Image 1 (cartoon, rainbow, N blue to C red):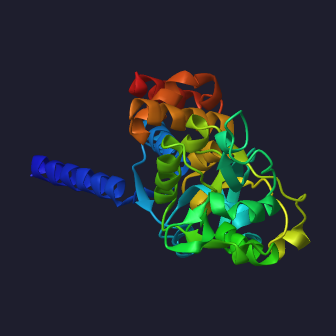
Image 2: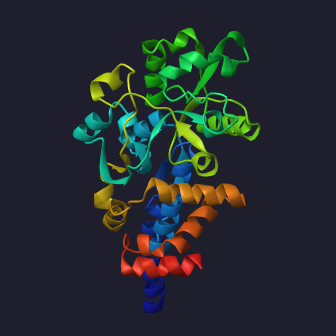
Image 3: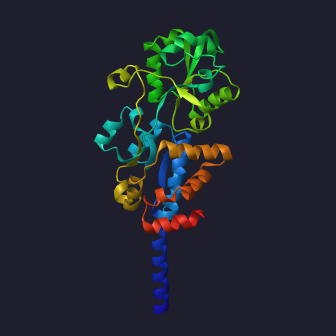
Length: 320
């Protein structure tokens, strides 16, 4: 009878421990549809799973859905929230809808770009094209395939704050008289359109930002604009500011995962590092997880300072 009781109690204990270990849901990481976000998500996925033994799940979502998911706690972590492009960001933080842990990187620029070969060199078609306002003189250089009377300027997806600002800029600068402003449904499509024009040596003008693999591979020039001021920017005038690209977590995450929250609080990189990884992906036709492993092997001195000593040993063993 004693043996039976011991067996039953042992079985109950095993089942209880199994239930406890499996009841912890995976950490859900929200991922925007741009390459740098996918890269950082894979780096963090490897570190959390290998270093801290917690399962993660990456869920693709546009910015609006990602923010909504953070508020409803369906998404736990966002590694690349372009805070200044999100009108509700400060209010969301003040309301405690989610928490900013750190700035991933802030050395980024964005705006309207052209291939440098259009404006520099002996064969440059528009050597005097320096500023956004200069575009009025060059609409014929960028013909709209659907409207022969106008040129075309490419923008990002509707719903992006940057796209809304460019809509205003088209009107404020009088560019809408000369150009069609064509928004693109995803950042991947926008990159493909730019890349296709560049490889053919064609004229192209449109929205882009850094870091991207495009900027790592192609020689592009940001058109000049007036100095950034918050008041002017609100109505579509002037340069884009550099944006704090932040790491945020949902309410309660720090209490539930204190060690992981500490790691995420230490997660600080740069546009240069990110572009290098994206360039590696493009050049080697590598998946984001391969780029993440390459980064973790190449930049050990960086990420080891972000994690505990025990986690660092586990991660290093896993990526060999």
